[in-house]
Image (cartoon, rainbow, N blue to C red; front, side, top):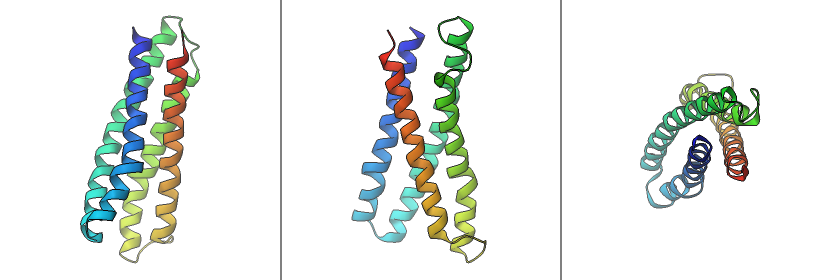
Length: 141
């Protein structure tokens, strides 16, 4: 039962990330004025980051429980993939967002475009990690 819940949560998390990256954020800039779209997407990524923290921690706790019950190895991809996605969330949102705000104000060593590119790469890596977790979890018998 726990393995099915793990597969479902990983799949839902992956779907959330794909919808944010592929639908919500690009369409906000297509429909709204640039300032409004930026505010909307900023709020969207804030909600996504906090949701990712909760789901990542929950999936890691599930992996620890499965390891304790002897169903998976202690240091398995079921633990490492959500941990990597959590790292991408913390680095990509909670560390880079304040730096991006400072860069937009003309402060800091890196430009806004550079920081935005790093943030985009971390978000893309998070999507890959979560989808790999969902695929792995759904392929277990």
